[in-house]
Amino acid sequence: MRVEPFEGVTTAHADAEGVTIVRVFKASRQELFDAWTKPEHFSRWFGENDSEISAENIEMDARPGGAWHATMIHGPERIEIPFQGEFVEVVEPERVVMTLTDGSNVDPSKREVLTAVFKDLGDGRTEMSFTQRGGNVSSDEYTRALRGELIFFERLGGHLKARHDPPAGSGPRAQSGKSS
Image (cartoon, rainbow, N blue to C red):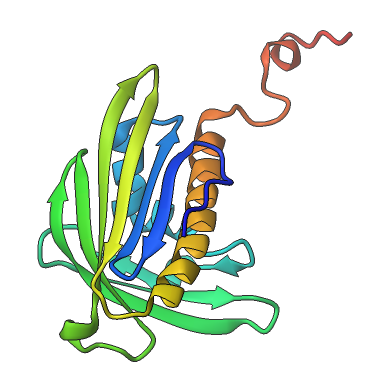
């Protein structure tokens, strides 16, 4: 299945092998790397639109072999969804490889491997090439994962944009005290 409905997405594909998404962000490689490795950023975008991860529900030790875990609170029913894994490869600001298991599934043979590679395109833009592999879920489940990850990355884009946009009322007109 191919889906390309979101801003900046150049490739979005899911099949029996996993998920591949390539998306361009208006951000530096370092900002994307930090968004994947720092809990204060990761918690802002990892999840669908009606989900959240609070500061007390996330820990990340972003180094090879370092563990990470986060509990997402999802939907109006406030369902808790625990995620965990470990960092396999951490190359600042180029690449992050981490494992993912959800729920009570802690069997290492059932983990998925998430890889995010960041390529500087110039002009403050970075291409992120993302894959999810593992072969532990069906093609239909990878298709659902693709849809969810597209939403995650839309939220990531919004988080990065918010870091660049000045707060309301802080532009030159507001600072000069002049109005139109």
